[in-house]
Length: 291
Ligand SMILES: NC(=O)c1ccc[n+]([C@@H]2O[C@H](COP(=O)([O-])OP(=O)(O)OC[C@H]3O[C@@H](n4cnc5c(N)ncnc54)[C@H](OP(=O)(O)O)[C@@H]3O)[C@@H](O)[C@H]2O)c1
Image 1 (tube, rainbow, N blue to C red):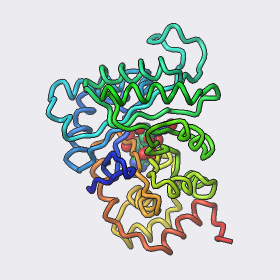
Image 2 (cartoon, rainbow, N blue to C red; image 1 turned 45 degrees about the vertical axis):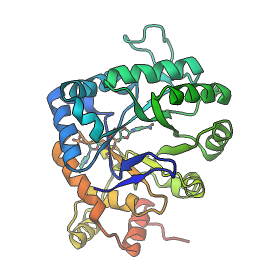
Image 3 (cartoon, protein in one colour; image 1 turned 60 degrees about the vertical axis):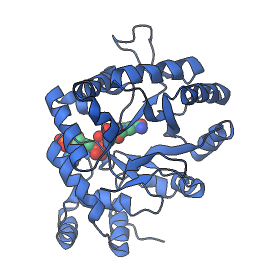
Image 4 (cartoon, helix red, strand yellow; image 1 turned 90 degrees about the vertical axis):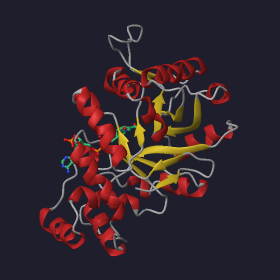
């Protein structure tokens, strides 16, 4: 598996990333296997958020690092902040909302460091665009975290191009990515300017739910022919489709099964033909031809 820079200023990530969102649904032993299998396959980047697993997933992952601290040097860690929701673990929150205040961003990142049992996060993202986002506060938080060496790079998730540009104008460092939902189950970013902006800025997008969260519907007959042509599985084809896009997307796979980590890693080697790519887009658009 190749590693590539997300942006000219870094960081360098494995082209396929392992997402930890669903990892609280399996045992800690399976999480450990997922970590080791990912690393064995060259999937060295792990995507977290403070809230995953009702604020437990980072800690479960951190236990793996506590048992084997040498693993940290072989991996890159992404986390996110800015979402708050009612939870027994956060009794002071009574309604789901966003908080991108300086204090909360710094507190959340420092808490993620503790949970993940690490001294730095490679990339911290603002999880969702906050209607009360004050870009000066975000800038203050990012500058503090970077100066302390606690976070190396910064980005956003689910931002529109205008939200991305607005925040970027207030920051002394580049936003290196926008982590967005894009897949054969959600092709809008190809047409709504999300990917155009990434190409314009030379920032690679991270693609969440690359298999539509497991709900991609494959038309058996057509997909069977394509899978045979490439000697690939459907999910490998769906990942190869994202990997072919010139914006240099980094798909974040969400499987909880080590064997599917291995399967996904092989998607990188599928040389998808341009016409097959367009045929898959046509299926994704319900059979509609390109205009
Ligand atoms: N920034 C954001 O707002 C945001 C939002 C959502 C997610 N994310 C990130 O994106 C990551 C991936 O999201 P995701 O989990 O929705 O990704 P996904 O890879 O599209 O979906 C994973 C789901 O699909 C199932 N699956 C995988 N391969 C399959 C196959 N061949 N056949 C049938 N089902 C299959 C998995 O089940 P098994 O576990 O049984 O394999 C799992 O339930 C998350 O872990 C998180 O890091 C970010």
